[in-house]
Amino acid sequence: MTVHFHRQIDKLKDMILQLGQLVERAVVDSIRAVEERNEGLARQVIDRDTEIDEMEVDIEEECLHALALHQPVAYDLRFVVAVLKINNDLERIADHAVNVAEQAKYLADEPVLEVVPYDLAGMTRRVKKMLGKALKALIDNDPDLADEVRSDDDEVDEIHSQMYSQVELAIISHPESVYQYIGLMNLSRHLERIADLTVNISEDVIYMCRGEIQRHRPARPVRRSTDV
Image 1 (tube, rainbow, N blue to C red):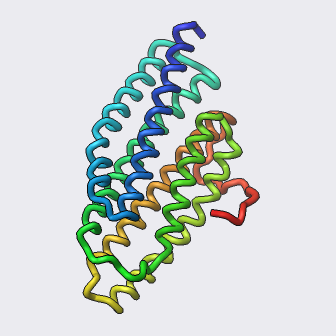
Image 2: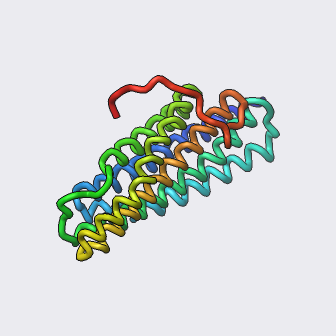
């Protein structure tokens, strides 16, 4: 490949990593806005989404230029295809972060619930950790770390699946707080979708590094730490 193409690849790497940093910040800040009942921080997440949307379009155009002008093959082709897909998933993660921020704005004006009926704190920790791992796997070209992300998703899915029955019981016991519980239900749904999209990113990293398509395949077993 030409020197110009490799410069374009380097530019794409910088752009997708910058987008990843912006999206990770949006997720972390939206979760913090919920935890701290911080409406101002939630509004910042919402306002910054336009920048993420614009960057997503710029990255897609850069990928299409690389494909059209240079017709890359082998790893170079896999890299450009992976960036195209990761770019879309990051933008969708940012959209869910905005939805989390919207819930934070609503909950900020409501009385604090004495008990959250499911492990929201554990879910948020896992989701933030998964996204951080997926982005590190992308930066380091580390398919093994990406495999860990796919396995970590099982814990988030388990919390989310148990959430519905737990919130239903809470609504029955405290019907005066029904709208707050619905807000918590929506939070779980958006966090679960962020985790799923993070898995998509990890699968694209594996494809980029190994040339293996991972969709619909079980994650490789990994050694787990007892710490979350």
